[in-house]
Structures are given as structure tokens and as C-alpha cells.
Length: 379
Ligand code: NAD
Ligand code: GLY
Image (cartoon, rainbow, N blue to C red; front, side):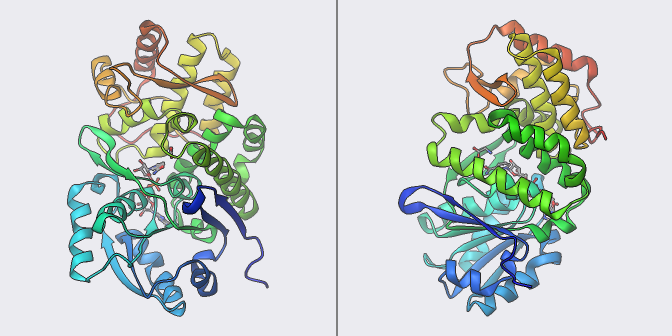
């Protein structure tokens, strides 16, 4: 069989910093493809303990066959390690291996590794080439594209970071076969996001195809990754530094980041927090008269069908407001929210009655689960 069958290329158009996203089974395992897009003799391959056990050997072997020697940097796994201490471990190993300005940093893993390795690449020797090999659905559809890199502050998600675009993204959809179910669902939250903010037809497709996606049907997954990357590439090309339309990609994130920080990093997965946060954004949009009850019910049903939580954890209103007040979209102390004018159409606004937000937070307290435990999943 031709190895290139089923492969797609999407361009992120950013002038001289444009780059391709290559999508399909085996794209990270193909030395000819790697050699075409990456010219280096050595590369630092940053990954986590869990991903290393699965993919470090095959990816290093493919790089070797492309003439690239690997410096492996294996980090502890998970959101709670997306911090200064882990970042310093990367710098320690880059210096020990004498990686220079020509040595690319390759992220092999989910969004945590991608964000952290990307920030290392942005800052090491004032910036070195960066490549993303995303291995989770969430990273393939969202975090590996667009150049946002960051680590967390104890009081706020992704507070310390930089924009640093990758030179290449290799989204190997075959790698999704080993992803735990909970992580697959978490990735679907960001896929559903694209439908809600800008593509009502994709939302219809998702409603019809969620069962196939949950069964990991390769065609359905490939289509979801491709359509999501097309949206992400278009938005990033229009607004790389998030001065406008890119903010809409943060649907559910002001509530969601507050959940992740409030319950402790890693208790709720990012995609889970975004699912419950997006339901809150939909409820707030209904309070403003933009969505109807049936729309909100449809949003809840979609996330539940994807086996995601739809009810936020219990937190005091003061804690919600304190955490949301650290959001990067805050302007002059005003919490700005991504809301839905209709399903398929998002707006960003700080112009809403304070009582509407308070009522949304109060309402969620009535359905909330225990903040210290993992979320209740549906489906
Ligand atoms: P993650 O990186 O923690 O990965 C989830 C888990 O899956 C980890 O335990 C990982 O080791 C494991 N894993 C990864 N690939 C696997 C595979 N193929 N098989 C088996 N296990 C595998 O989580 P995530 O959901 O990928 O990313 C979440 C992070 O992404 C958050 O920190 C979030 O803030 C960030 N994010 C960033 C952007 C951006 O634009 N930069 C966008 C969205 C999210
Ligand atoms: N995930 C939001 C963004 O990349 O802008």
C-alpha cells in the first residue's frame, strides 16, 4: 500500500514563518517525509515518560534514518509538571548535550509537552527551531498549531509563555490508537469548540459522527483532525497574536481555566474543564437572550455524548471571580468572555450585566460535583 494514502497537508499561512501541518497515519514514522521538511543533524526530542515508552524508539529511529541524531529529554508526565521546575530540566539537558542555535527542539507528546517544549524552544538561546509531533487528539486538533507556548503559574493557567511558531507539525493519527478513552474525549471538547464558534455544519456532522469518533474510526478521526486544523490555521493566519478573532478560540476557557486551577492542575483534564466551561458560556449566552433553551440543551447533549462533564465543580463565587480575574482576556479589570450569538457564531465581550455572570456561577453551584474528585463523565 502506498504509505502516502490518506495523508493531508494544511498550510498555516504566516508569510516567511508559514509551515505545513501533515496529517495521517505514519507521518511521524516516515524518514523521507521528515528529511524533506527538516534539515538538521541533531535534534532535542522532548517527551514525557508515558509517551516515551510508546513512541520514543520509533520516532528516534525514523529521525536517524533521516540523518538526524536524537538527544532525548524525557520529562515527568502531566499538567501538574507544566512548570518552572520541569522547564529547567529541559534547559539543563540542552546545555549538557551542547545543543546550539541550530539544534531544533521537537515536542513529542500531548499539549503539556508541546506547550512546555515550545516555551523552551522560544527562550533557549533566544529562540531555536521548533517542531511539533502531537500525540493526543487535543494536541493534533488544537495545541500543536498556532505557536502558543507556556507553562502554568500556581494561580493561573499558561500565565508564562511566548508566541513561537513551529516549523512543522506532524499529526500522526495512528498514534491515537493508544490514547486512553478519557483523553480521547478530552480532545473532542476542542473539536466541538470549532463547530460552536464558526461552523454549524461541522456541528451537525459531529452530532451524527460522535459514535464513530469514540470508536476511533480512522476516517472519522482523520476528518475531525483535518477540519479542526483547517479552522485553526485560518484563525491563526488572520490573527496570530490574538488581537481579535483568535480570542474566539477561547470559548469556555475563562470558566475552564478557572476550573483547572481551582481544583488543582491535573484533577480535571483540560478538555473536561473546557466542556463544562463551554456549557457555562452557553448558559450565560442564553441569559443574554442570544441562545434559546433548546440550543443550550443541544450543547449539553453534545458534550455528554462525547463522554465529557457538563457540570462544573463546586467553587465559591468569590473563588470563581478571583480565578477568572487572572484570565489573559481581562481588560482594565473587566472579565471578557467568549459567548455564543448563535450555535456556530461566537463573540468576545465584556459588555454584559454583572448579574448575568453571577447568576451563571450561582446556577452552576446547584448542579456542581465535588471539586476534589475527577469529573462525572457522561455517555
Ligand atoms: P497531556 O499533554 O497531559 O496528554 C494527556 C495524557 O495522554 C498524558 O498522560 C500523556 O502522556 C498521554 N498521551 C499522550 N499521547 C498519548 C498516546 N498517543 N497514547 C497514550 N497516551 C498518550 O494533555 P493534552 O490534553 O494533550 O493537552 C492539554 C494541555 O494543552 C493543557 O496544558 C492546555 O493548556 C494545553 N493547550 C494548549 C493550547 C495551545 O494553543 N498552545 C491549546 C489547547 C490546549
Ligand atoms: N487554543 C487557543 C489558541 O490557540 O488560540
